[in-house]
Length: 449
Image 1 (tube, rainbow, N blue to C red):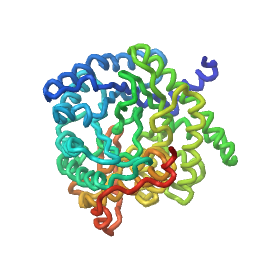
Image 2 (cartoon, rainbow, N blue to C red):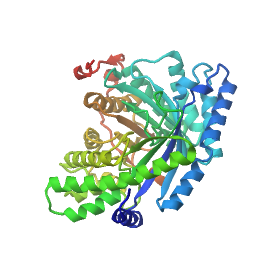
Image 3 (cartoon, helix red, strand yellow):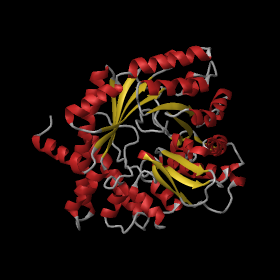
Image 4 (cartoon, rainbow, N blue to C red):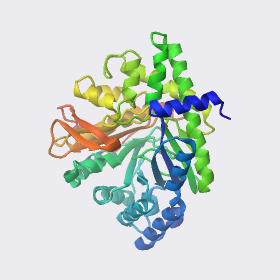
């Protein structure tokens, strides 16, 4: 039960600190849509998404009005299409069906155009990956992901090399839209099956037929609460963040359970993430600066982020029946006004950003680089990030945009995608390393059986 003080505090968080439910995501299994006919598979996919998720937006609108809590995104995630459409090889047809369904039921994005190739690639998975440039250039709401590494299997460097090439092709295929297609693709290490956030959401093979996963967000709330512990030591700072994360997560759990009831779905998880937006007062970067850094990117940034991420997890886990997804602090560059400013003034480099990803959720996220950046360099960035995830047994990812025709400046995407300053990559080549191919073995601590 909620105490009256908790309710009043939550109302204040919503009014003045940008507290919201960032996404209610319905996960759907599509394995009952499999057939050896492309058209039949696509038709089944469209029908199931429309039938099961057709009332998702209405349910979210009802709950938002009932509790006064903004629900920003309504999304669907589905079983990996590389598996669902393997028999028919109708990958593009499935993607078009997903896009039509998303528009029909008025959801913001639909994720699950995904493949899991962390140990090896089948012929059909390679064909699926090769379809990505076309699919992401002709659809509007389809999001894709490819898992290229895991702590158990190591890093599939053949897949890493291929993804570097694919990302360049997507950038060229969507050059007329500032290479925005790349913003709808995530390359993962240790991808999770219940992530509600895009672009990396998919409904894993161990999930229910229909499940509701909720992602919460409240960077502004945490930043505001930290004003009460100015000058205090880190133990008090951690306790403050934990208490705040607890309150935020309780709100997320309430919405998740109520949404599941309304939609006749299973309650999945609450993702305890601090997901920023480009709006002022809704920045993870500003939380780190509130801890005493002059700017994100200064020495001490990684330690501050580690403290924040740990405290968010500790506070949130106590408030949720089931915590999952990515759970932590997100640091997407273009989607966080504090991160954008740090890059603009030269305080935050790609190298420092990589160090930060070793202690937080996800990784190199919504980063724009020059269109001249080679496929091998992009693959090397993916490999570095995958290594951090594999060695530390955590989820890491890369969502990078080599903007065609640009070498510097900024790209304005608008909405939640924000503004992406072009970040500099190393001038030194990684081609010889990337072209070796094969699989980097898993770390010794992976052998736990």
